[in-house]
Image (cartoon, helix red, strand yellow):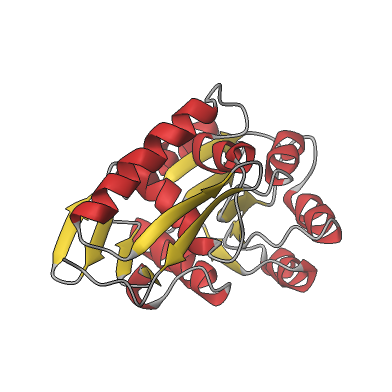
Amino acid sequence: MKILIVEDEKRFAEALAQVLRRNNLDVDLSFDGIEGYDNALTGIYDVILLDILLPGKDGLSVLRELRAKQIPTPIILLTALGEVEDRVRGLDLGADDYLPKPFKTEELIARIKAVTRRRGAFHAEGVLAFGDIELNPLAFSLQCGGKSFTLTQKESNLLEYLLQNTNIRLSSDAIIEKVWGYDSDAEDGNVQAYMSFLRKKLAALGSRVKIGNLRGAGYMLEYDAEETKE
């Protein structure tokens, strides 16, 4: 799961990012509202943690403009304890939740899971399922039947993206932006290599799920329920 933190208190933002990364989340940071807005417009994030008091462009303006641009990414506002009116305004403008500072990491993780579950990204307990496989993106665990593999973070992020878009062919460019980041120097060869890694692990699990690739159209998960196993 890819998280964008938009927070001008750098020490707090970097400490929060470290905690989220220890929980197997992929995190980017923006320290002002203008950069945060520009990054959010890419649409590559699963959740945005948005402070209200920001330089350049305040958090409520960022929220308002993102929703006006039809950016549906779940947004959790980070607020001070006394900012009741701002919380109400934020929810009215389209925020999915708010969290008063200071907060415990466990509560933040729970809120992140809750807003993504509401958007349909996650099944029970954060598990994504398709065909005969299940992926727990927080544990990097891929299961099929009674077998399982622990994936690398990149493999897990890639499979998570495919599982969230099972009816859409994803181009290499879209995959690179989502999994590697919009400012990454990754190329099509990187995507091909990780698709190969995932295909081998799916085959080793005996899964009927395949990663199809239509030249010029992109990658998509396919499931053959009638395929017989040897």
